[in-house]
Image (tube, rainbow, N blue to C red; front, side, top):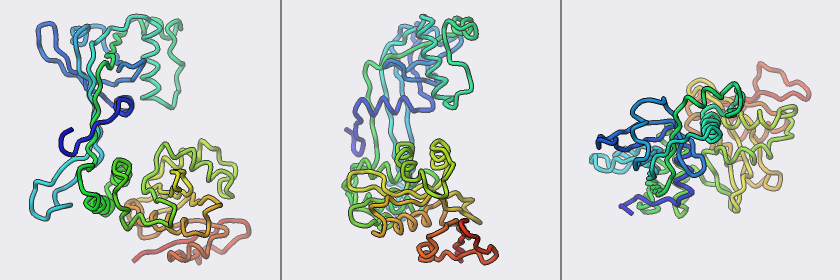
Length: 351
């Protein structure tokens, strides 16, 4: 372990390679010339597999040792976060993985089809094509003519530099600076650092009622739990689970709260142009935790989210929570008269 860099276990490293948009494959030709290529790869049967033209440089590295690598930038940390003058503290927080193996040529048509189908599912997950089948007249000739290579991940090593070497109080200050800076990836970086360093003190912007923890960036692993909370709400009548899931994932600001067991117990999201207007949606707290301040903490976090805090006007609609939202400064739209059983639009205007 180098200072500040911690090793991942094999499962974490494989997951990083599997989700990487591209991977780098390095090897040498028979003449000893180095060869480095960036490819679209899919993890299939414990190997990273990719395709190419049936003639060319890639054919020269079949049967030779190779290194496969990928990286994921979590956040760039400028020097002035910790020192007003010295450039030395500037750094990058990241995850990386590297694997070694011998490059194999995949010739069996069914296995080639399996690799190509895995690539399609990774890069075109929405579908819109007939599944690849080696026996299908749609694909038989194409599969026969394409080069498919695979590198079994014989040895794999993953590393994560997520401020693990810093003192807990220093990490808490770093979280506050990331939140203050508010670049698009900073909320997710905050959650990555908290997961890697659970002893980090909770910064003020994430203060929550006892027994709960706020999350400033929810993600794919939270979708099912969020939809469970939201399904059946009056404003979601007739909205499918799939549509609800896409709405959460498509929102630039999506926050929530977890209980002591890590279960999602509150969610809220917003869309925004970052300057003129933002809209808040799908604010929900688990029934057992209502009235304890969880909803207030989640809404305050959402209003302070980097994607929302700069909006002059923040809008929402509600049938029955006017008093609750008035605490934050929301007012009913005077130009829109209330109508029975229809959500009233409220707006928060900031100076």
